[in-house]
Length: 419
Ligand code: HAM
Image: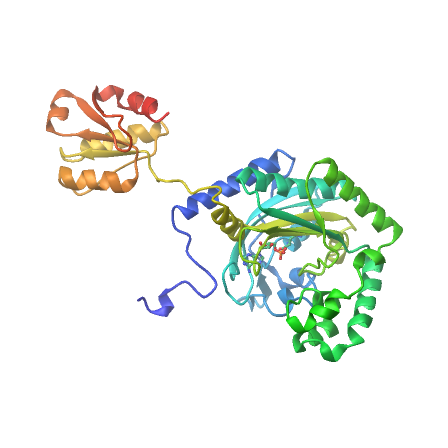
């Protein structure tokens, strides 16, 4: 086994083929869907001044315990991004694009979490953020966009949970009510939840510790603390989702791990795998975030979907399979290699994925390499073919047989065979 120094750090992993191809394909499907809805790609830096992420909430685990922070050689206090909403909003404030601004993004995030199945220290997300409108139909569009993406991947066991945290005042009143509720019997709470109660009472609702279950079950509901305006906004979001025939469950205890949320919040869970890390995506409104970052007050709503967990859900449901071979054609050349050099170049220029073997190996070894490559077709050039300016084209998978074709018709023959 390799020295631990030469292994990927805890909570990270290499993504090898075919998983790497599947990831790229997933991002491709996502890009097609969101670009069809008017979102354009933004590529923010992977690190920012730490203050950008402090806006996620000083009481959140993400900020308190999980940030990769460091001082760079110029003395700047920098953090690797734990998520991208803050970066997108920072970018909005910096560039002041026209509103509405609809942005999408894809890429890695970093959180120093306890690494376990489905929970990594470096993980990929795809997401969208829409800044400007307060329109509840935009919340519905954002949620529907994620839903259509899951549908396109072929996922059928996704549950959508929605909640409203109300406006900032509603949220503050609810936090007080929750604090009062949990304080009535504080001794029955787990030690961790007692600490959480002091800093962030909403997060106590997230505890899965058995000691906390009774008090959580009897906790007041956020939905009883919504102002008329926030209640009406939420009603319109729900009506729009119903109109779009997107099934949802109202989850009044849905609190998300970041502090910027107001009004609509939502989460997607996969029923296809283990409950512990089954949140495959989530998002909501963050109407105060732009202002908190010194930009003009601008409402916003968006989501991020965990790529790693979404692919785990695909595995569990047998959806969105990885490609079965990196190449379509393997060129076998026992005449010295020049034929393979020229034929692979010709095929690649015609858009056919092609590979070959190296170091002038025997016919048997090259045929073995062809099989191992997973290619569907082989092009074989031996002495006879070289003499007659032909090549044999052989079906490696089905029973399409073998035919001898002129050197000039190899590409045409393969394009027809690969259709
Ligand atoms: P989040 O809930 O922290 O929200 O992350 C969104 C998704 O990223 C999660 O549902 C999960 O699938 C994935 N994820 C988060 N942490 C990890 C991890 N350690 N390992 C693997 N996957 C993980 C946000 O990040 C917000 N920025 C979402 C948002 C966008 N809200 C508004 N706009």
